[in-house]
Amino acid sequence: PSQPMAPVARGENYDQMRDPANANLMTAAAGVQRSATARRTVANLHALGVTNLLLGNDDAAIDTMREALLDETNEHSVSAAISESNDVPLLNDLSVALSHRAVIHKNVTDAAEAARCAERAWNIGRTQEAAWNRAVAMEALNGPKHAGIAWHDYLALDPSSPWAVEARKRLGS
Image 1: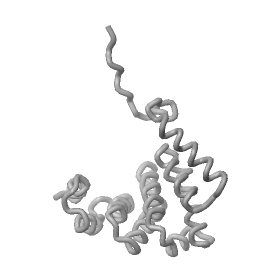
Image 2 (image 1 turned 45 degrees about the vertical axis):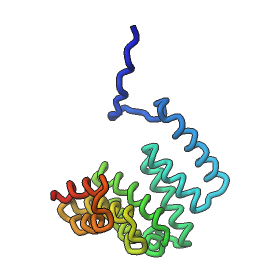
Image 3 (image 1 turned 135 degrees about the vertical axis):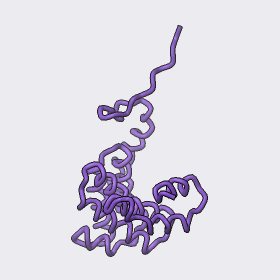
Image 4 (image 1 turned 180 degrees about the vertical axis):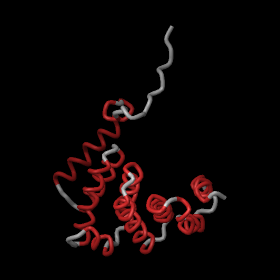
């Protein structure tokens, strides 16, 4: 008699490139890579950065989204580009990648840059995504107790979704 397959363990040794369940993601990623190689536009670089983030390639995601940010603003430094950018989705996604890497590697420099990206995104586009990523970035930089205002800002925009439930948990209320 046949038995159901054992669940896939996604621990330290998990390689999503070898997981057949990710075939559609890999096909899409290849298409994004081809587009970005053919035309290095801000939109294509941003998409490639997000693709790398989804594939667990944090360093490549951050490098690619920084390149997109520099191209979008025509600035020469990432710091200046963050201050000048008006691309809320790009700032949000770069903040996510930096926050993730900051937490994994306990990197304060990444956490600070994530917080700057998230704060800029919040200041120019007060979206739920910007509010959420700002709170996460503040947690990565200063710990959960120092992200309270950011979580309250998120809850002011979204008081009732499942995400709001998670925000309240993070607030400890």
